[in-house]
Length: 156
Image (tube, rainbow, N blue to C red):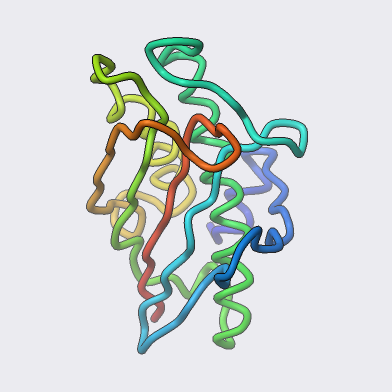
């Protein structure tokens, strides 16, 4: 089953690449690696605001990380097309790095980030989708977003 068939089966429509809000580009390819800039969680087109351990729970933030994964897939699709391939040309999701807006005492950043990792694994499968990962708690994120995630992928 192609990645696009899997997305359709999951009811996911890929969004267009978001216009950068500052002095950066959405993705950069070097060799076979594609580096995606950080994407913040959005809900209804607006930043998904919250701080874990203060105004949000892990269960509330996990869907935000999933929403970021969908946005990342839209950008990855554009990066693949710029490289002359498509999402089926992704050889491996190499790394996911997640920043979670959280209090100093909150310790479940890894569980929030599962919202992204689980969707990536479901879309790409256990071989291509299995990735290295880091999840950090940070004092604040742009626009007050609850989660920001970046991704590195290898193309075939």
